[in-house]
Image (cartoon, rainbow, N blue to C red; front, top):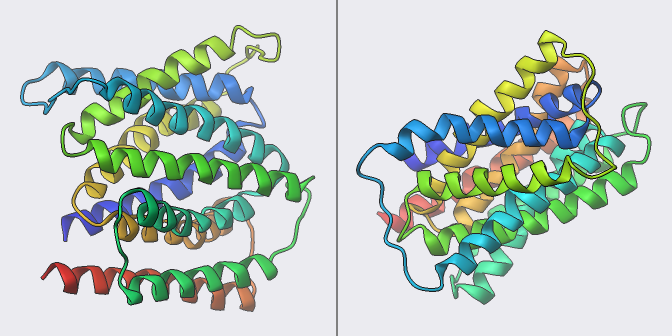
Length: 292
């Protein structure tokens, strides 16, 4: 059960990132936030990397896969998502993440030859139907000045995330989750550090305590905790099953947005959320029975 617990916890942390980013982007430049997020995560990882027992069986040519994985996520993924949250609401961005399981399943089917049982596809279909209903029951507000553009950028982030999930699955047999996560954070630090040197970035003039704490939370808890748990779990379960858990993010995001941003759930959204959760549980139940 540990991989399923880790996947659920990672989804909850990732969902909270939409709330944190939406809040902190109103204070700091997105590039500055993402750079600090990567640096904080790298610092948190350092003591673990200096310890013994890390699995590192490098094979010639793996640098290409490690580089591509880091480019997919966090580099391009965070860049697209940061821009998306400037144009769309946290709730709508969370809903778009439900396209990831379908993208992962298609990618695994063609690239990893990972054939999916019918109930996994059925679970994904039920969840996707719930997300479509969830999207139809939502309305743009002042926090989403251009939701169409924002949702498109969030979808591009999901394409990048698909590449990360598939490559992480490929590399998980040779590298520990900690090594993979460290590779991502180090690449992200270099990527966003270089971006801060461009004319489009701006350094903050003041540092409100609440915004600083949100940035620390993003780096220490979400980047380190969520990615570490997800990368570890994706090496223990079928890749499509791990991807199906992404459908929990719209549900968690709506709940957190209701708690922290005072966004309300209407009847249609509540019904759609139950469909999302039901689809994930169906995929999880099938995966466990097959493993047994």
